[in-house]
Length: 248
Image (cartoon, rainbow, N blue to C red; front, side):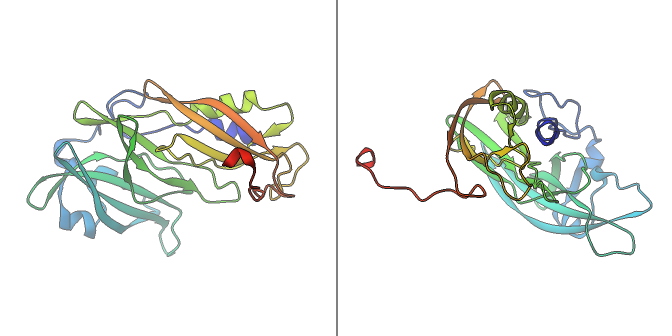
């Protein structure tokens, strides 16, 4: 059940299309998308369309992401909370491109997802691909991965499907085994590691060992290439590496 919920998480972006391989463009008007850097840091921009009367939005971190093919990008984080409380329920993020002196144009803004919090984006290299990775997680015991990933092509960021492979992982593990918590891949080396739970385990103590996962690309989609399972400690801790002749 937990695995099914994990694999069902969809890459959702506020835009004209959300399928992998499509341009991740905002559907907002040009007026809504263009804002000064000072405004982006002082208030929640129109592109976020804050309309819930019971919610308030508070600007958070603002910073540089980097440049790709002479396009310079920055990000801004915004916290959302019920009115009258300082505790954020979730965050939203906007990626802007610098289009003039002190002027920004919003290019990405993932849709809101209750209990999801985003962190500072990074530009990565994966083989010949240039990626924009927006780390994200869901608060709670599952610590589910709610990241967003985009690939640069044709002078724009395009969506990457980072969730479909999770269903393949579920199908390829033995019956009664599963990955119950969030998995956070390393897209530079195209790999990930997860503890494995067995039916009857407590959420805090997986007893099915660990799995190293080899990932790959198929178009603009992440795929699972191989699973390497190995023993782990009593509750999923990685065992110390033992030196052998094979390491020499």
